[in-house]
Amino acid sequence: MTSQERVRIILGLRAAGWEEKAITDFMLYIVSGEEQYKPKPNDNKETNTK
Image (tube, rainbow, N blue to C red; front, top):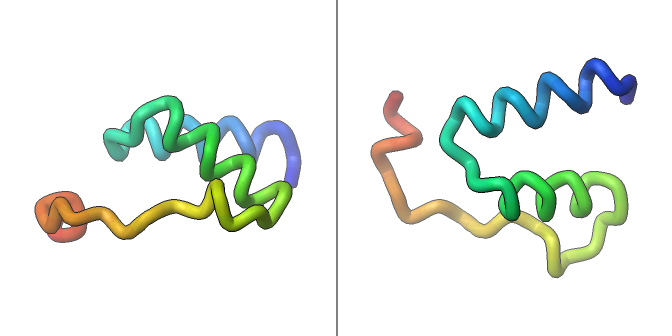
């Protein structure tokens, strides 16, 4: 993954309303595969319908 792709992912997640810690944890999960950083299901159904 290039630096430009990483930046686009981060900017996209920010635009989607993700908090900085959630973004950081997600990126750590992508790189490390550690379950502790794996995103949890979101209970907010509104974000899935937009």
